[in-house]
Image (cartoon, rainbow, N blue to C red; front, side, top):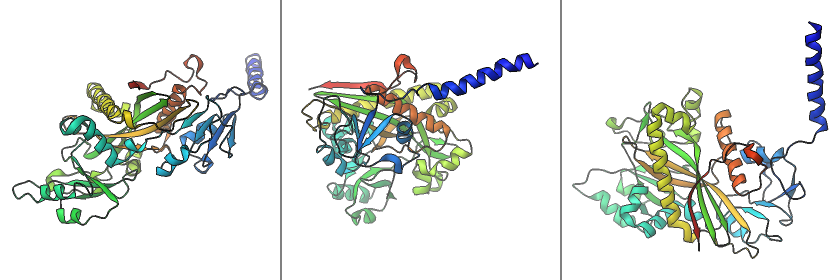
Length: 382
């Protein structure tokens, strides 16, 4: 017996020693082996964020002087970040910026709708998104529509240009909309016949990657994503429509995840049928490509003299109806990347790894991190 134990003991000691003797394999790379990160904000104030978790165990140096860095991560996702990125000091053509100019042509609810309308026209745009009215520009048209005597009452979702469903109002009362404050920018038609998972309305989150360099603009989408659920069950026959039973959000879904509801798109598609999942995935790619066509001429504008590459990840939220027709609801800048559990942590980590692989700042030789799953939607050259 002792003869069997001795080799195992030697092997265990060897493995412990080699861990300390050999240097770690760093995920990120640069010419000198020490990747330097420039940022307006140190990400350490979000210790559970997937990006921070990926970066903290790599051989990194945080730079606060806004120069002599390899990748610049603004760290904020508002209108100010666009202006600040234009002031970044570029010193070499290999420096990369995690943030694209023109991002709000995707992330602004009003701009997104108007861009789609301008490029595709109303008929095609309604294949991409539900009917939407810009506020306050279309307010009178919307009120007249809602006041129609012979018209069945329509419910509209009134939205601000904020992320993560903040401040949503659901109403069929034209008087309420007439007196809405100026912070609300669109009224989007509510889809009552949405698909229900065990009685709950859902939304599907996919990840869009935009890469800009010189006159080249490429748009990519990732097949991995998450499912979110409304807080309470939806009862369309009872006429009850409110925020709790109608708006699906990651923050209202955590009890569902605990009770065993699928969090990953893959598990959800296994539940409803792989054929339906493939049908939805095909629709998502088609809709995302139509979006990229509508914004391609409005993305970019940093005018980096050295032709530096910039890139950014967006969250695309889709709704499916009872016939599995898919519609885009909105696009989020800086999609939430603080995971709930191991399943969505692995999904978000894989999306980030594949993003960094696409812009060639990751050590993924021989696909040691797995095959890159981003799928090209469109590539444009001016």
